[in-house]
Image (cartoon, rainbow, N blue to C red; front, side, top):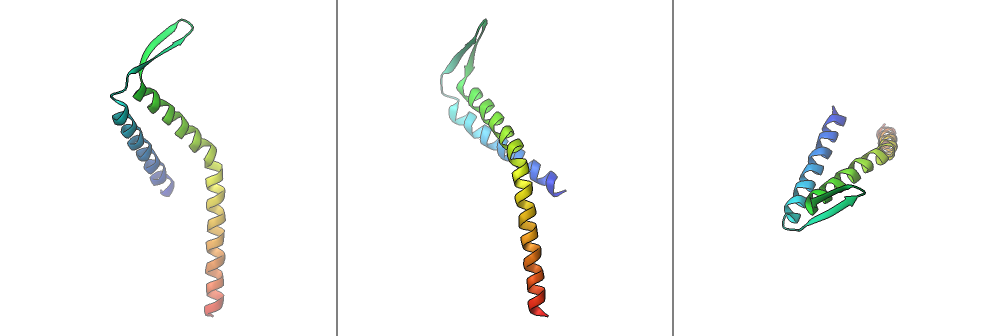
Length: 90
């Protein structure tokens, strides 16, 4: 349940940040992108939002292992501290 709430909170945070970026960049001129035959005029806000989402997703994927390892370390530290406190209070 805690993981689900954490994931939902991250998704909401990403959506809010993307919306802020889009609102800030709405007045900017579109950028013309061309790849070989394909040409498109993409608003800068959309481009920034897409790049931000890609970066956020990659960041979550890459950090997932580090976060879980760090959480396990913190949990073991807390457990050892609790056991130390119990020993001192006996």
